[in-house]
Image (tube, rainbow, N blue to C red; front, top):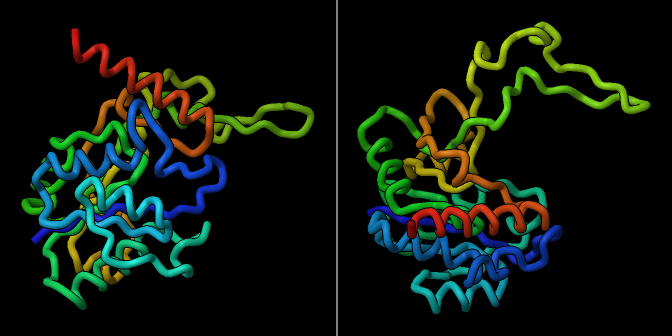
Length: 232
């Protein structure tokens, strides 16, 4: 069996109640729950939360919330992997051990069912432990710079000051949408980023990290533009 785990704690700081804030017509976590259901990849969709409102909303929309996440896993410093490992151990203790587990973030409105399907097929058919979403940086990271005192600037990689952008190696970053993994890999809390992982590449116009209010506004503008384009 395959399960989906959506980690959605209630104590977001920069955007209050971020995981249930309305995003383009519905609470943002519902985009993730509905896409997970549409993908038909999962026997169970479990929301790991410490928040009663998130719990009720998730259950009303077809997800399961079989436990309340412990406080020690609900602070600002706990990473994704321990939260997923906790949910898997709960599943194994009371029900059947899953074969594959996918963590889907609650703030991933650009996620599509086909992305999850592609990720599952890669995990099944390639000798890896994780498959996750990624996209290319908008600008060559080799040309990035820091701002020093008195607003002076300094390149991180000075050797590329005269290198043409088209001659630089492409660089990618985590898209922050989903992470497929084998059950034992999650339980052992192995790091996701490494040579035992492969990616599902997403186009840049379907990726936006949502950490603050500016990110949220940008994401809604991108989402609405994408939906209008699809209708043409």
